[in-house]
Length: 279
Image 1: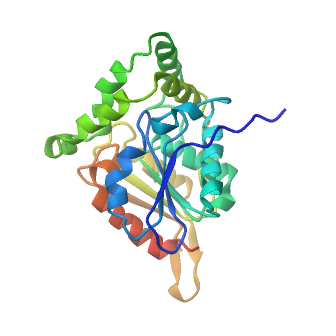
Image 2: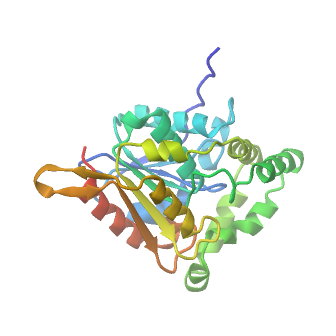
Image 3: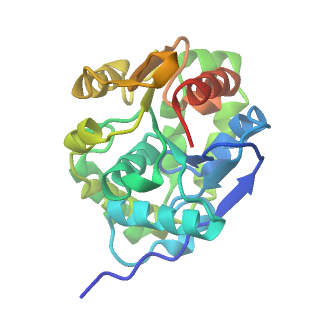
């Protein structure tokens, strides 16, 4: 018997412009609020921000199958509701896992793929046993305190020193989360699969973003993903060839690239979209 789809997550549709819209998929256990400054830096692009099932304003949508694949299918429901045929997802960390499942399950809905501070591997920063243990603890106590205290892992030392206002914002986002929803996502992360082969076989263009100060998913993870797609170029008529996989490492930046460096990330995105992605 087919598994019923998750309820449609909360989303916000803003901006305008031609070309496939960007769909922003955030990290765990945060929300799309971590992309607010990036959206402000992209006034000429249509952008959909999604609170992933179980997190942010989508806490109530964490029902049914606990899997990253189900989360990806829920994002497709957002695309359908917004009338979007093809998009470019930007997935950070857990959002990257969801974006990779979109590429595997719904490649026809993607015009390109942006993966930031994430990995195709099963392992750190989401060790299955640790995530199952976290889910058990949350279901037993409802205590988000350890996750609130650990929010600093999302920021590099430069951001913590030069942008001290960011950490309190992240802690507030985690503090406002629903423990049951966070537990649901933790179980989905514990069950996730290796998606290296899916990334290698995805036929569209891929942009990899890495923070030089990221200790959760170090730049070496992005280099591994680029290697998995080695050799990809595409002939594009009079303009010659474009690289199907590009890697940009952002200096003085930690795990949450778009939160720490929204202007720099926006500039990289716009240049890449204009050069590589076609409707």
